[in-house]
Length: 117
Length: 117
Image (cartoon, rainbow over all chains, first blue to last red; front, side):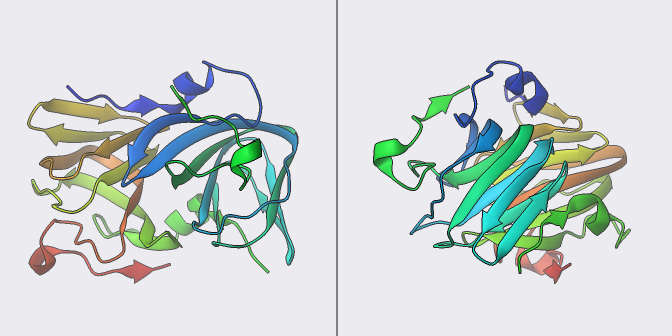
């Protein structure tokens, strides 16, 4: 039997920031949820676009061309290679999609480990 | 300048059922929104998983092993090759992700055209 994945239920299962949890896989990608607060590092991905969909709260994605502001139900795809810095003044919850194995910081040395929920 | 995509704004721009609108692209995939109501055809995709995230309403994805029920904030990935039939008793709004060019019905002859929003 198959079951749907309820994102709110999954979000209740952890509380640390900037540590994505994988809730599904899709065509070689991890579908992840993450709680963010504060400032992440400036980084880029050489090999992949970066998918963000805000579920709760407000997220700013700083880019060299200017800030992208996202509230609940807002989606943004950072193009491959583009430098960006996610920032959230208050706690926000975000759906992310990246190829399985992509380091979230753009650098395997500083990346969060892959955690399945 | 880059801008976020507000899914509710995009959903206000059309009203036909089972006709996905592409709102972004991501790693060779179309990120689409669709309004559904009633029963779609049984179909499968030979080459891709099928990503569903319900934004509003209730969606049933009938599969040979049993039904998968999705409400708002519920996500389900139909595995590549698996037969499925989406069904919504009442209007529902869904975020879909499929490789660009994938026929939504599994068959190019009956597929909805690609429409960008």
